[in-house]
Amino acid sequence: MAQLTFPVTKPGLTVPVWLGLSGETIDAKCAAGQTPAPPVQARGLLDTAADVTAVAPWILQQLAVPATSTATTTTAGGQVKVKVYKIPLGNHRSRAGGSHLTQPDLLITESTTVLPDADVLIGLDVLLEIKCATARLALHARLLMGRHETARSTP
Image: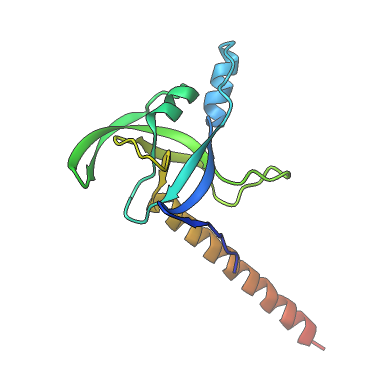
């Protein structure tokens, strides 16, 4: 089964992440004669206590991405109103252009707290999707191996 490995640092499980504009937003900006903002590299922290991924306001301002809506979320300090955005998130941009942790159309919230060691709290919305995608890949590989074994054993 595929594995993702992240370093354990003092703040927790950290991972570098890239956040950018959706293809839709890039197309709209280009059609309007505007230059889209380049992707932003940030410090991610895997947060299994967060249901939704939250991004620092400075990143959203740098990307100049518009909010899609607002929502109410519950934090340790109580309920707060947050802006919701739709952006792609990925990590470890490889030479082939792939990423180990990729969400092309992720609904995220704007972080209401400035954290000293992270710009992005990667929540269960991403972590559970990775687990499901990895399980699907493993199941597909087992199915293919089963077909291969059946084909080999057929006289």
